[in-house]
Image 1 (tube, helix red, strand yellow):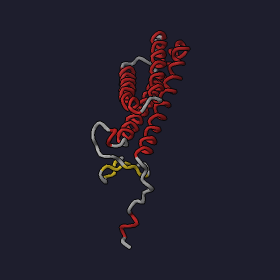
Image 2 (cartoon, one colour; image 1 turned 90 degrees about the vertical axis):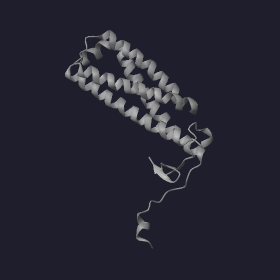
Image 3 (cartoon, one colour; image 1 turned 180 degrees about the vertical axis):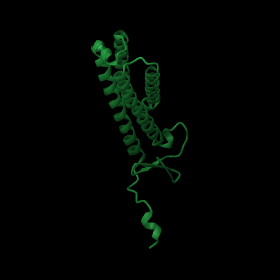
Length: 177
């Protein structure tokens, strides 16, 4: 027995293209739904109790807090609808959601830097921004994996089909994450 054999990875069965796409899309949909629920809950809190939230953040602008809450509710609805959309629409609109999340993170960083909040408010806004950045990263990763797992006939970039084994994608025999 070759000593290197024991170090070689052992992979499970290769799944067919339909299963790979379905599994990847399921992960993306789950991530989007979690984003939608958290955005919706935050939006409902901000829209329903802007004074309470404003006192915690110390912005002095409860009207803006309510407006941002209403915007979050609309965003959450759009994200939830996208999560349930057909694969082509799911893949088309997810980058827009990721960009929206990135704008939220950048805006949060800018307003914290500008000193718009109390210390507690800055900590809360910063924590929410970290959570939103995590959603953006997860959505981008799962979007890329979903797109990569589509069979060649369904891919616009003409890349070869991808085989998925144990959660690792392989193109032309080269593993990529």
